[in-house]
Amino acid sequence: MIKKRILEPDRVRRIRGGFSFIPHRFLTDGFLAALSQKELLLYLFLVLDSDRNGLSFYSYDAICTLLQLSVDQYVEARDALIKRDLIAFDGTLFQVLELPIKPVQEMNPLSHSHRKSNIRNLIQRSIREI
Image (cartoon, one colour):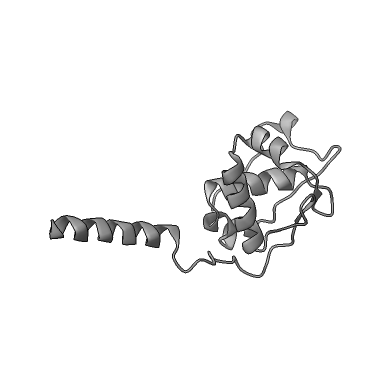
């Protein structure tokens, strides 16, 4: 077992002002691994910005500017987080939700890797026919 020691005693984090947290099971139960990079970026932003009830009020244009996302990337990440039951959104207000019992897997039966595989197969079949 690794023996832990404080590396910088004068720099130990303290809660001052606002407070945000991500439960440890976000990592250990597979929620982190289930998210795309853009989904994770948006989720972390909403966690950092939210109040003690998980509520956050940022416009899409402010979020896109701060996170350097296109509107399409933002909408895709937002909708994926909603489908994964990690956030709620009413059109203007976000709520970061308590984690579900287990990660919600991609709802689309043709996942990104499956679609890429199908496209590759179609291309290879077309080349063979030529």
